[in-house]
Length: 499
Image 1: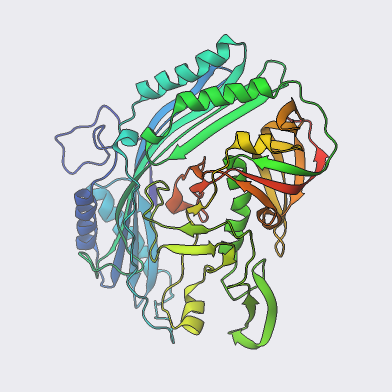
Image 2: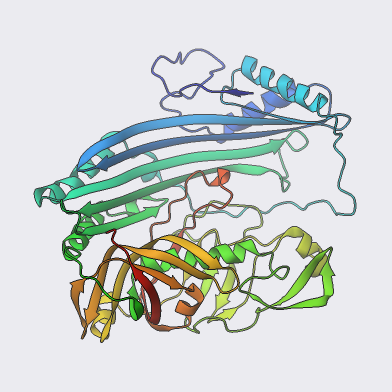
């Protein structure tokens, strides 16, 4: 069962109780409202068992433009209430609705109970496993009033201020401005007021803002891009982003063809973060010391967890440049990480040494005497140095300056060999200066090789990594703070006609 209506209409009767939809000034649900909805659902349940209620609400304002004209402007909001009924003698049933008047909630509860009764799969506890522990939820800095209150008029004014300079010079621009705010809460009828268990979600609210812009010339011979995302709109400077995209477009016009090969590269922070996603994904994919992948040494046939072989890992070994430390702190205000249970500050690479990997609960129980998993790098900070991009260019005899990468695909899970394209600005550096724009190239390289070939590092900065509907995504996008870097012998394998 799924009931859908358009939220936030002007015809809402503010005097009617209970209300079905969010009023204009109630763009997201408060903690008190969520708790009241849960109590009403619990009271409607019949037939015993346990009831879970998951309540989410979100509001999103966005503005998109292309060819210097706005193509989309919207403000949307919605509520989602998921009801799950566990009846031990029968089974379980799930229903979702976005209406929270008593009539709709009762209909949803009855439907969930009918589904549970027809499941013919009694709910039984899993034998041999201890009860799951309370999931500790970190306190994170993910709310910004400046993001939440940004209006449609403000977004329009910002877009116009970005479009006008590009249009005045005869260029075409496209871009996107978005604010997103949301809440989530999940409670059980057996724990209506806490303490929370692993399956519960304490009331959480967050914001996310992003601004990105691409500028191209009329002939399609040059392209520039800049973007930034953050939970806090005040940390985004649209004017600087627009000026950077425009400058890159002008500097990338009339590119020349360069032969593929191995080059010294100067990677801007966005390009570094694009490659780092391959490493982040590899660490999430393996269950720490069970399974293969880039962090495995060799299989030990004598040790097994169930039917899965245990692999000796590279934990404790130096695997990347000793100047690199990569850590994760869910409370880091510059990252703005959406919380998950058991998140904790973790250093994954300490001065080049692999010190931690993610692992699942079954591995923790079998090998670590711990009844909890280790969460992954939902957001991370990478150490850097003090060398600016201009200084990297000045010290380079011959190399390439890369704005960012796109369409990255992993080719080999054991080495993380990957392929992808340069985008929105690639330049040849000769004798310490940028000499000419270059047509885009395809790379075929491992980010591990890149992190072992570093010559210089810059100051870490936040990059474009928006988190959207993170509770609904299996692998949410990853906020990151990374430095620019200069590395040697980066492999480019073919030219690309696209700008």
